[in-house]
Length: 445
Image 1 (cartoon, rainbow, N blue to C red):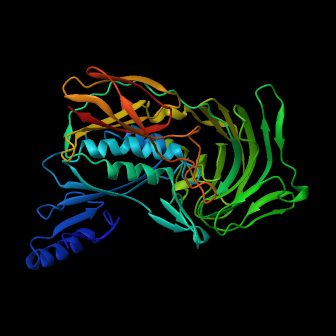
Image 2: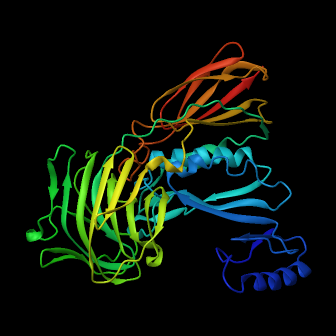
Image 3: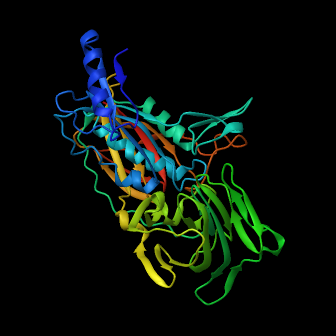
């Protein structure tokens, strides 16, 4: 055993540094060759870890924006083990778009392999009959299995590791934002709450939906482990104090609309959620009111945007209003505007991400290219400093839609395809499909 991690996500807890020092001294004295790993580490004085364990779970766009996470890391400090990472937000049950976000991020891990010594996707395996997390890389039942598109990203990186990273310059346009739209919903997080008078109106005044609970929860899709949805006295009620409980209504092709409703907290530690532009049961695009242990509210659309202090009183009805137009959202609480912002407040996203490396076994060149745009991108690769034969292969992971997923019925719906590549001269012109990850293996002369 070469590595030992002391604690996991314990940094910041009382007593952790003191216990770290005890473990460190005792183990170092007997096993001086062990490399120490710490997660949540923040400068332990002289007893620094050899490696820090970073964890990242977020949206596809977050991972794209953080592809340069380690570009300016201190090369004199501890090395990095990205011990847990995955797109977990706005990725369906593990779709192509999520995989492309991870691929973009992984180009940064590979580019900084002098700092990032290890990385591992999490979690790895799930029995579909006992699913408790979303997403999981490899899904199985008693007789069949399938890998997410993310599984093929991991496989393509693993099977195409170079030996020496080469300096690579990428000149990229900004990716065009998706056309946003989707269902509406309400939800709770460790709270019991009630909802009523739910209405959705189009910009021209047409009523798209108006709640009528005389037939119970008919017309609503109910989600959440341990959820307890019911209708009582004409009000939609959820009484289980569990995490990530949702009720969805409407259509995925709804784009611009105004959602109004009333909400009341019954009990629990937080407030309530108002969902909008939802395309999958696992999407987390919402206004979180009284979240973070009833201390704040904010827009969560991949990242938390425009967070503000907020406390929600138990037993009080609140009037809520959300207007969405493209990637713009406005929110009112009891007639007061609280949020007025664009989704892309987290920053623009580049279309292209790339790395290059030599392959000592074949003498060839390995180039990895991610197109995070939804549209194909015409590119030119300048290979003038490499002595290439003009022959090679391209292995491409893509699909018709970024929302495409694999399943037991279609285990390879989103899977890589390999094709020959030929070119002349010192440049390669190629169109990279939208939402694609491509591995080019180019032969030398």
